[in-house]
Length: 44
Image (tube, rainbow, N blue to C red):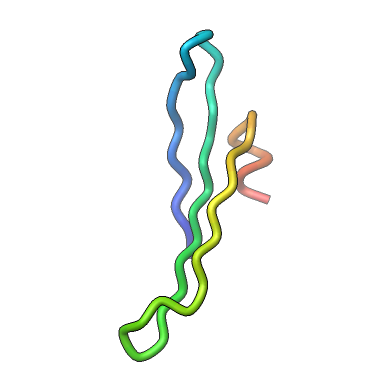
């Protein structure tokens, strides 16, 4: 399961960052980070 974090940019518009990190035996094997303009887009 991933994490979605929202923040306001300097122009006042919201930005949502989706992060997904997968570990195997304590080591990170996958790290994905992407930024979206809407929370709905970040959830899909």
